[in-house]
Length: 139
Image 1 (tube, helix red, strand yellow):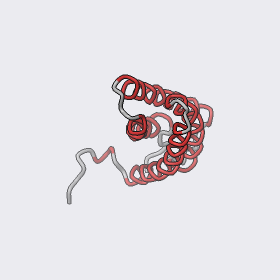
Image 2 (cartoon, rainbow, N blue to C red):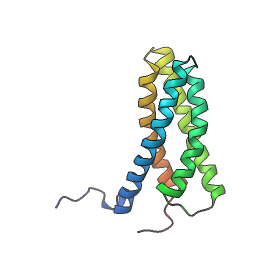
Image 3 (cartoon, rainbow, N blue to C red):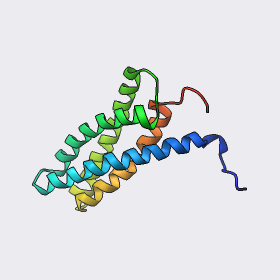
Image 4 (spheres, rainbow, N blue to C red):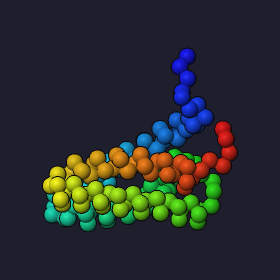
């Protein structure tokens, strides 16, 4: 049997949390990305569209991740503030990636945005798991 190099970092419950995070993220981000493509094809600026949808997505993500993904029972006030701060970091990273790769390097915004969503999702999972919704007990 092959053992993980850091067995204390990965438990079965972590794998289940990650699966829920991926499922919830695929559903919510796919919907938001389709809306993003629709409104940018109608002429809305890519950074404005991302900003508007990021606000909506943050609220949806908080509710879904707190209740279903992480099943967190901690205080709403503290977890929501931490969640907002982590998503604000994700927002500015997303904005920076769009600005650099689309506005400066002239890559298509559709490709940059989908790559940004994937990169930022990994970052936000780690921040959410260890900072925003930490496990209150070991399984």
